[in-house]
Amino acid sequence: MGADKHGFQLTQLTSEKIDRVKRDPRYKKLTSEDVAYFKSILPENAVLERDALTEAEHAKYTCDWYNMYRANTAIILLPETTEQVSKILKYCNDQLIAVVPQSGNTGASGGSIPVFDEIIVSTKNMTKIRKFDELRGDLVCDAGCVLQELDDSLSQAGFQIPLDLPARHICRIGGNISTNAGGIRQMRFGNLHGSVMGLEVVLPDGSVIDNLTTMRKDNAGYHLKNIFIGSEGTLGIVTGVSLATARIRPAVNVFLIALRSFEDVVRAYSLARRELPETIAAFEVLDKDTVKVVKDQDFQIPKGSPFPLFETHPFYVVMESAGKDRDIEDLRADRLLKTLLDEGVILEGKIARTPEEIQRFWSWRDNVPKAIVQTGPTSIHFDVSVELPLLYKLVEDSRAWATAEGMIGRDIGAIYGYGHVGDGNMHLTIPALRDDEAIRIKIDDFVYEWVAKHNGSGSAEHGIGMMKAAYLSFSKSSTIISNMRKIKGAFDPNGIMNPYKMFPTKEEEEHGEIVRKRSQVGC
Image 1: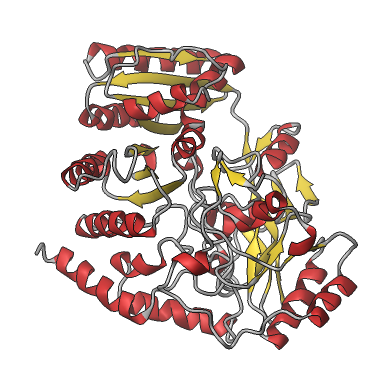
Image 2: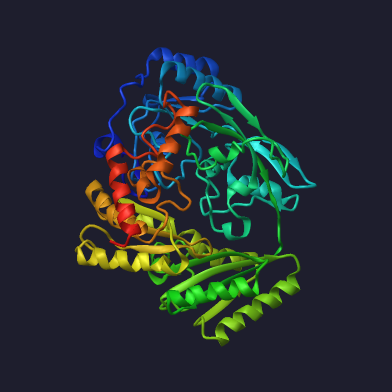
């Protein structure tokens, strides 16, 4: 029996189903001599050859989580040290072999999957914690460290990673940084540009930027780290990370509240920010369809357990506050819940305080993506940011448009809306009823034009990758994209790093510029 993804057949190869890009003839096709070289510099079992892997083993590296992109990559390299990464990239640059860096392969934009015959360089085996300062909480570690494992390690000293997301158990810190991941607690921690103090990056020519500083204040020259945060492996490979971690706040309250409208969600958010200005950590919205899909797939914790509130309300919010003193934080939480009820902002609500109840409440949000991808052979996913009052209007307008087009029940199963209200970030996930590129393009065109019309961003936290490259110019001007290309050319003149990603074609850029300008004047 062949490999599958979430119980469905693996998607068609990207190179066969997407015709917007063609293989660049500059790049060398891999030879046996190339493979022999990689084996000579890497440990045994660190060179994975396609023909020696099962289809399922190969798919772990060559198919994305949403089953939208897949490659037939011949070789996967698993270096353990920065020196080995340096040797790999220098050789590939000299030989013009295209490279796709890969971390945990949990990305949601197809950025970590090759398009044609690029090789994969995975940081999976780079997992050392190099240094941790228990006085200030400064962490220096390899880029391949798993986010959850880092968090577990730091917790023994009373610290935590200033980042959290549902894929915490398998995503890796280097990939988080390369996509500038936001997650469910960004409203407390801010984004990674603030938390990352320094990076170690191997450039395409094999040279190493060694900037693993732990100085909180360092204005000596350009802040090169910020160029690589969110660069999605197009400029080099992040191999080491210097991170300012956060003290654990032990007094945690997790609210689950029900609301009658998205306007009330916004009101609840405003009240929460007013009443808990220093301690609010997360504010996540779900609609009732999203709650239902988690229950239908039985992904809540404990399995088979009922939803903690009545399931018929239009909207729900999972909100978290975290402080130092349990008595004070509980009092504040109780007071906020009473205010929300007394002012008619919410219909009902509960607060979780024990670890078991906290896990139970959060499971209804954390497991949403996992539940949705079980309902269709491929899932079309959006990660957009717009002004807070407009967040759910995107979901409503998308459903109305898809209904008018006759797509629901014929082409797609449903349209699910959920996300980070605290960051103005909505996720729209749409399970397709068949693996059809035309469906994706039709929906993409509608959603990204809608976002452009409302002056939003087509990528809030997941990056551009392959999925959104054609639509970058819907959010960014030609001047910005032109300067991005200059940065790319300066660091990677041979273009070997993660090709075909991030940038639109010239025709796509011109079309996006027209759409964006038309939206700006309200036409």
